[in-house]
Image (cartoon, rainbow, N blue to C red; front, side):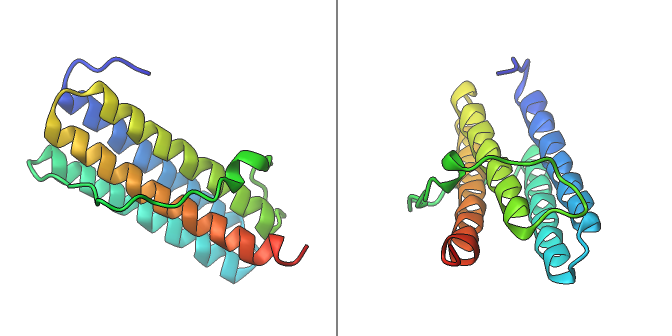
Length: 151
């Protein structure tokens, strides 16, 4: 994990990662031939943009509080392999890609929470980790419904 010289540096890093995620999902949406698949990834891009905006607000003095509820983890992401994004990827492959990215985002925020001594920033990172866990759960549930149910 990268060392941060200040809370601002940690927040800047997280803001950059959320922007990268939003850009990734927007790009992936643009590659989808099927309008409904495009819409799914446009929604993900919007969610990541919301996360970025929340982090910017935190940098300006606002804070997030993590929910007390634990998010269920179906652990599907642990047992599937991802394929590089492409215009002709199937919905199943796109879901796997999203699962893996949301899992990585959850881990990132959990790690960032562990390295800061600032209690407000720690809580903010844990709140964002929970949001990423919710996204992962949505993708895993969709995968279970669409892919695993059909097999």
